[in-house]
Image (cartoon, rainbow, N blue to C red):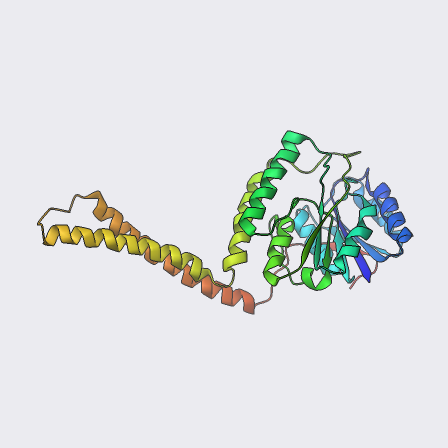
Length: 314
């Protein structure tokens, strides 16, 4: 079993050399056949030159340099596209994940398709990081039906055939277990070690919460209706149209049988509005069906641009 380690880095000049030494020592001690793919996500410090120096000393290393800061999801996607291992392991480049936990993930991956790390004893500030993360993990588990304690942990292991079938956008990397569940994968979770950040500044903040919530809505829609949008929009349209018809039917009886004036009734406007909106939602569903057909029949577009590749690659 060969392993590809994919690590996005952004302005981590103080950590990359220590990270590589610790990671290399852990992998070689465990006797793992590996390659390490560092994805420099448009760093503005000395991260890229240091990674190139590391690559010049190690044939097992590939360095991908993105033209600008595309974000962590795009960086992971770039690494996945270049990975050649039977198993792909992801982790952060800030030294908060423990490389010695990788063999534990690989042991579990033998009987599963995806293994997710769980930072049970997380070493981050409570109110700014741990509390929002706890709430988010609970909400994501309830909405997607895939119950994990720590969606945000980057230390995960995937079988090659699982990760190669996924397309990532936005902040979707944290939702990979939920998206992959659509394929019926076997998912396991294992407690991992988490270290406080030693050097450098965190790239995460509370501002990510809004983006995560929006991506969660996207994931839920893709999980349930990605190939059948008409069932989602059509259900709303049919419901609105049905209630609109009931309101207008009631007003018609009032007018025809009892002779009451209905021209100024707010219910008349509401009924007409519901029917019109219902028709529009059904139309949106039909357009969605056409877009899905076109999407599945055309080539995908990349979400990143490679500036250069240092080291062996596909």
